[in-house]
Image 1 (cartoon, rainbow, N blue to C red):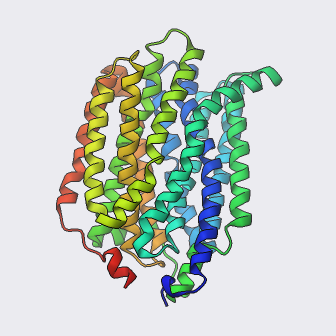
Image 2 (cartoon, helix red, strand yellow):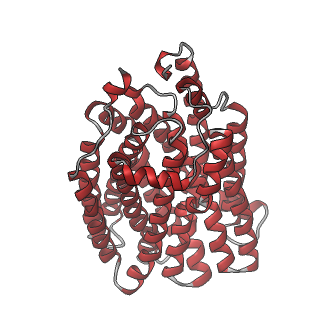
Image 3 (cartoon, rainbow, N blue to C red):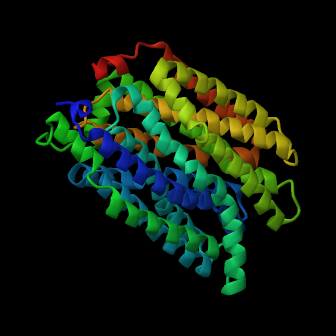
Length: 423
């Protein structure tokens, strides 16, 4: 029996989407706070752009730490267990960073950001949970609804960081950035509770029941690697998602420092960073429903090609922007988010549609592991490039990396179309 033939599937999917929508709004707020504060906090502690980029990359790439145990938890307990685990790790990360701030210990703060990145992992995994029970012909759209929901929280998140700082400083006092971390921790706890209580029945476990795969053997990240190695569609999706993530993180991580280097007032810089990164995150998520419909109508390959072109344009606009040209930087960062959205939604739909429900956690987990490692590589590389060359040279480097996906898009992508799956 297929998911589309089950009479209750439509109602179950609506409930899943409502729950995921709520958690993405709240979790998006938490991620937005972490993105806005990370590079600034570590540069204040170390005085180095290199270490600041490392912290930011570890935040976005922290999924590499949790993806292996998260896949095992998801295999056993479904999406509910894996997502709650990710947010719980992020809560632990906020506690570590708060301790590091009071101890003035930068290495401990960097470790905390690695844990904090689990919130980013959970947010990315939510898009797969939205696709588990979706009809094949609407998989891209349903997946994109959850991606879009992050807009509400993530756009506001960087500005909330500044508000949390001012409120905490007035009410409690103490070192800078503690208020931001407390706010992020509270939001992650609330998100985990909503997932645990309301994401029932679990979409992945239900999809397996409907497909008759409840007795399928448990799979690991290694199985996901083997699937990607043998399946051209999965391989293309994994590479496209990883390269898009690399470019987005590489440019975005250093933009906050690029802005601050052109401003004398650090407090005013945080406000400007919040606005520009908010616009960037809006570009990442706001048009996701449009991207999802394009994927459903035209397939993943054309959307991936368009995403590649947009990312190259984003690097050109942002890389040519002086530090005090906030309008041009905003345009470049919005394009960067839009290109990332096209690559992420199309790649996720491609990977999900190419495997059965029993193979999804391991294959999707492998894809997110590669994305996390790509993000870490971007942050590690971006700091030294900016410190010893320039922000413009970083954008040139990222544009070249973007074009590495072209050979994969030119190759043959096998796998059933949405119409074939629906039939």
